[in-house]
Amino acid sequence: MLKRLLWALFLSMSASFLCFCLVYYSKGSVVFASVPQGISKQAKEEIEKNLNLDKPLLVQYKLWAIKAIQGDFSYSLISGERVSKILKEKLPFTFILGSLAFLILFVLSLALGILCVIYKDSLLDKSITFITMGFFALPVFSTSLMLILFFGVFFKILPTSGISDIGYEEDFLNRLEHLILLLFALVLSHLAVFVRFCRTAFIDSLNQSFIQAAFARGLGKMRIYCHFVLKDALSPILAYFGASFVSFLVGIYVVESVFSYEGIGNLAIKSILFKDYPVVLAIVIFSVLAVVFINLLVEIVCKILNPRFSNV
Image 1 (cartoon, rainbow, N blue to C red):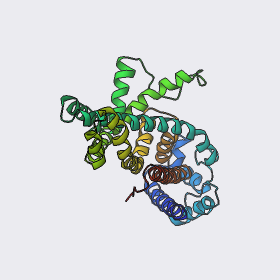
Image 2 (cartoon, one colour):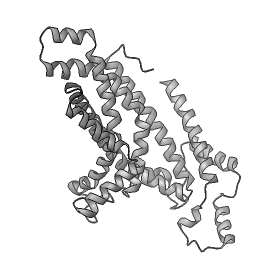
Image 3 (cartoon, one colour):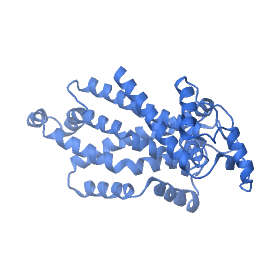
Image 4 (cartoon, rainbow, N blue to C red):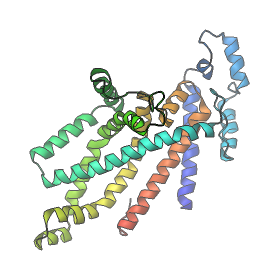
């Protein structure tokens, strides 16, 4: 645990420094987020000086890092609010979206993976592969735009932006409707790889001697697949899901931005565009810690399910 925590700290600071360099040298300015772009160059430089944005890169990063190590992520350069307060407001929305999407993706991948193994090389197996690979070939933002076009513009049956309609902020069903297209975009864009991995893991499990012995004893096919095969393949599948959480988290941020969903991802994109580096760096550190925590949790669960499992 201590080793993991030290590694997470090192990774967080390295990622934050790299991200700060990218934001520092990118075009744009935080000034344009609050004032018209017709502002004079002198006024722009004066505002940046008041925000300490005229200092060298290492000096700015040092000032931020000292406070961050003490648990103070400073204030947003755009809104003036505490970064910790902003993250506290946005984080629940991202957590709900990510948890639901990850759960649906996990269950659906297992179900389709088992179907592909049971009906191996059949029309059903090939159809599942073809359809899921078709969505995987599209970038996640393209899938999101396609869903908006069909369900929001053509058919007009689902909302395409925000977390709820105005006046329905406390309506559970209304908020759930706003999540449907985001969940579709996230699940469809990742489903192909996870289904193929589950299929491969199930086929490897079928070659185990105790599985063959279960077939020889005449046990029911569904019982063997749903009990023995699933249990044996679950540890590597969970490990793969944990290792793929980085790409899944990036997908969440992109989808939130496309659908204007008021979560961490949408906040990150806006902050990057206007060089609000205290918010950007706080989100980077949160993302790194979330990835480390998920991988540690997955490894613990895998060890409980199979003590002999080794996540190389």
